[in-house]
Image (tube, rainbow, N blue to C red; front, side, top):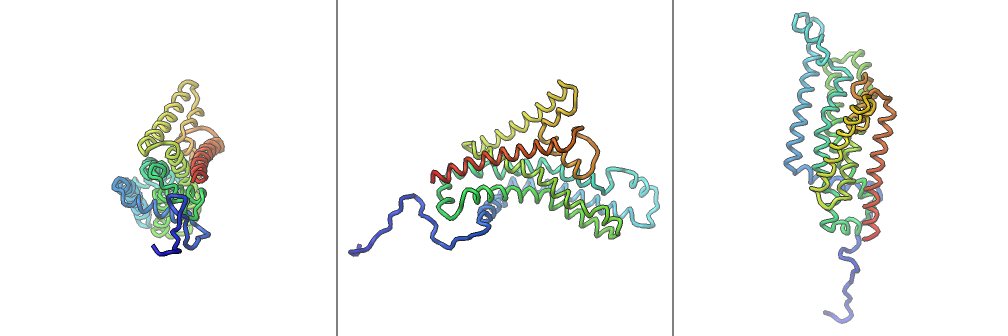
Length: 298
């Protein structure tokens, strides 16, 4: 070694970032990284294919409905199909589409998010993240946005595509007046569905030691919540207590957004919104607390 040369000594196992600082959307790097990993997962691709089959069935429904409702169609079969309510392309169809996508969104959220935070702790990746110009806010936002974007691709995005297809197949002013508000309601209902899934799974990952424990914990919580709601409804002999079942509370908000009649809970949607909002805030608080403590420790 030459005399006078100095070797830099770092007090941490990972030295601080010395490149150009990105001032905006730093969380996007984390989100893209998680999406890239998820896209290579075979189980995720399988769930995507199953959800895609549901979307293709709805595409066929829209095409068939618009084809049969063109002027000049007077055959008995066409008349019969027009009278079948479940065959119609109306707000109820879009509500049912997003509602039936919920299991796929839930499973994908667990598949993608159960190991997001606990895996970083187990692999000592927190030091890597926070040795760069990233804050705990960037970390939480990036992880959450990866799950939210994935969930919206299963719900809001295909719903908007169905609306556009319906408008192209039936380009009339009447159709536009009936459908112009559907994309907004579809996006809102999708967020009501996706946000609790994403934040709940991240909270479970933050307080668990492994991906398996996080997955089991979230399954047990959801299953126990459904059983408790059913039990309270039967004990009290009132359907209002079914709001304890979190999925039914989400569906109640969806009914209001799409102007559907009561099917699940005969309560104003405000109660369900408060319930869902409280769960989201609680889960977010858990995630932020755990990650912030990790940043301080680093």
